[in-house]
Image (cartoon, rainbow, N blue to C red; front, side, top):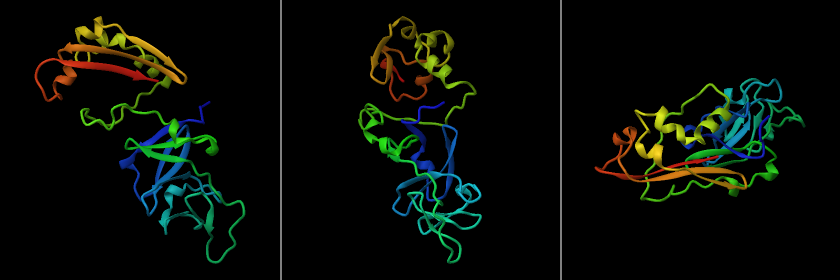
Length: 219
């Protein structure tokens, strides 16, 4: 069972182009692409006729044309064209998902579209602050239940022992953690002040000497 009425990250912004792409969120296959204006479109990835994935079709005039019999769907999921001059079937429609592009990510609402409120997308602090840098890399896929990863990340006390060659340092063992609760989750964090960068960071920071380090986990 999944929490449907929530925003989920479906892709990096750079991953979605004017080509059709299948993504899977909460076990649902979704066809995503950018329309002629660059806006993100997310449709159920199954033509209602024979269930061929729409992502196997093609873009036709900003709409999606099924690769099997040519039924064509607009960004709302409505069928707007049928082969030849055929009548458009009244039940030929696919589900359209609310999407929002923010923080160079594509967010998708998997539940009731009427409840999709973009203000509910959580804020990434300091994202637009020029004094902070951003790095990103490939995703790390881990074959386990997501709750085990949540448990791991909300317990940074293990860092000093498990990650001795990367994120560990004396301050990661000695600095107490602060836990705060809010209406929709918890935050665990600690500031380690004026400490030598941990081994992992020594290779990427562009300065000499000590630093203030924040460990922060938001769930």
